[in-house]
Length: 533
Ligand code: ADP
Ligand code: MN
Image (tube, rainbow, N blue to C red; front, side):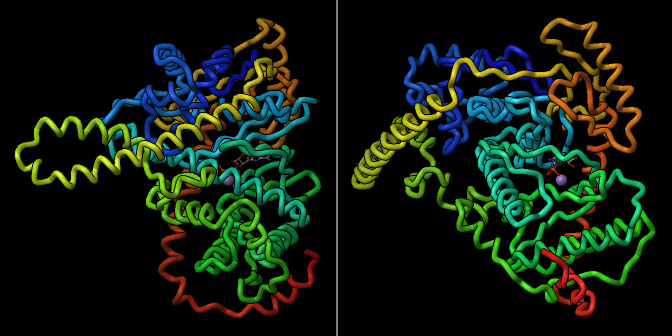
């Protein structure tokens, strides 16, 4: 039995991911690769389970919000939910032995949810769930028309891309001695990394050596650039301060190459974020700051990375999404998924069935004109037959892939510990009910409530003693809340503010990118260049 709880997740929910339930969920994931919704018949075909049984299983999966039924204009079908995707990723990571427990949420961003967890040996780790389609999701709820639903597939695709990119960068950067969390694993949209026992810089009010920290950060920006990279979101929210004043950098999916046509703008923005923060927080203003043109390039991490699995097309999709805030960017391209080579020619197989149905319906309305169009109809039929055989090939491939996933991830006795914790609002709840009061709800697996309450109290006391910040996430054996609902709210508000600022900066930068006169910083850079990278 696999039981995981996250947010308000049912402890016993993972039970439904065994056997045929798991097959159907994976089949839905496969179908989502090129269908906005997956019709029941297709689920049955991929999973190779009788339609009647699939229908019942889908009912169960819907009840637990792992999939959702969408009533489309053309056809009804199921879509994988964020929760369903989370479960698939977690289950796989458990099956691999990478993750052994999931605990409290420690970070809330616009584009991710971050949880603390533990590996099989109960060592701390961090699970970052990428959520790139979040904005699209809201829009779907607001406006449930057919076109809006096309955005369904993109959140799966883009969230996965972001996770893959972040993992690739984490690994490559660590190998070059950048101060980043340890990359442990990646699965679907989830990156598993080491836990940083530190304080996010935005929560730091006092540091011993302000100029020293400033220079450390500027030199980091330069070090990135000397490797051909720009962090792209280098600010107090993505920097963590450790006990010994060591700095760690996090959050990499938006990294760009120094060859990017807007590289200078991104570089300057990173620099400006730090300058602004130091001015505001510490009253520290320095005329010394780097500019991209002065950085000596020593390595080509950017191209090394694009050669390693994270392809140019993937990069392009993701950049487009970040640049334009267009989380649907990839759909304007011809291909659908980089995993399947045949995809280029496939198009949207979901409409095959729809087209056939549509054409049949159209037949009733046709008159004599139809005879004149005989040739056309003949061509259409021919095309349809061709599409059908391509569809068969696709189906076969999807089925094959599903079997592989089931074999790899579908162990029936994956064990995962969930330490009882204060449940946090789910993504949707945060989006729609952010003004409502959250009722903390304790879920106790062992029924050992008294002990838990005591430990929770103890933990609270301990947290109170901590200065500034409450990343009290030391051990998977710990019990109780490590992040209070008010703290989550505060962080959400902060993230929103931050994102607003980002947008403002972006707009400003776009206007002035060309016209801005850059003052020479060669002297300053001389200083940075000598530092050990
Ligand atoms: P987002 O893209 O949502 O901003 P981040 O990677 O910045 O995602 O993570 C959000 C928050 O989660 C961070 O501000 C930080 O507080 C926390 N966090 C993320 N990764 C780690 C980690 N490896 N160790 C400790 N805390 C982390
Ligand atoms: Mn961040």
